[in-house]
Length: 306
Ligand code: 3PG
Image (cartoon, rainbow, N blue to C red; front, side):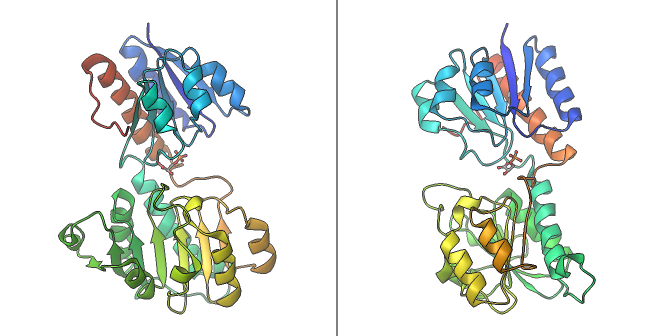
């Protein structure tokens, strides 16, 4: 009987786990659960018996891949798969999938929530500002970027987007202004919301040069990945631009410098929590379980990323 392992250091909501168990057991598979593990060894031990594995931001490196002797498929319940060693998986013939779009609304709501939080001076009682009428630049117009655009239009923001992988009309269709260079996006936006993945092209791509183009009242909102930011450039921006604020779903490595030198101008979640809602967990977790069943039963590789 096939064994399906859910390995999540950051657990899904219990209702999502229940749904994943039901889907796997109804398909006649054995359900295994490893949550809140504290050592890489726990993951290596668990994966040794699994035919399929559902993960979140869990690190699936070469060691994990080679420990998964029976492993045929890994599904990242979520969008970004920068935590999976695709080369190692491919070399072993293991299929890797993600569940695009399934947790996007939760991330988009967090992005807007953090914007409001900073605009209102972290709810400290002083007079803040409003989002209405402010310019927002959406850096990459994928599933999350689109939802951020639609929520932000409800706030009355003036929205632009940059995405080199899309045709301008795909963005304009949503009533969003298209800019044709990343520089134009940063130059014209008081708020920038990052929705780029972390890959070879994007790691360390958000640098001082780009940030310093932002107009007065600059706020950078990062619900993407901390690795896309050049941290020296970030600190320089904080030092040189008293108006600059940075909110991020997970703290940068230079967190202590920022906390000691720039109080009140940043907010970092203690743990990545953009997708940490019951709804997102249900959508992404159940989709992952269904994709595994469909892969084993019908050879369906629709969401394969390697
Ligand atoms: C994603 O890539 O889907 C998000 O960053 C969510 O990651 P998480 O499942 O670790 O919360």
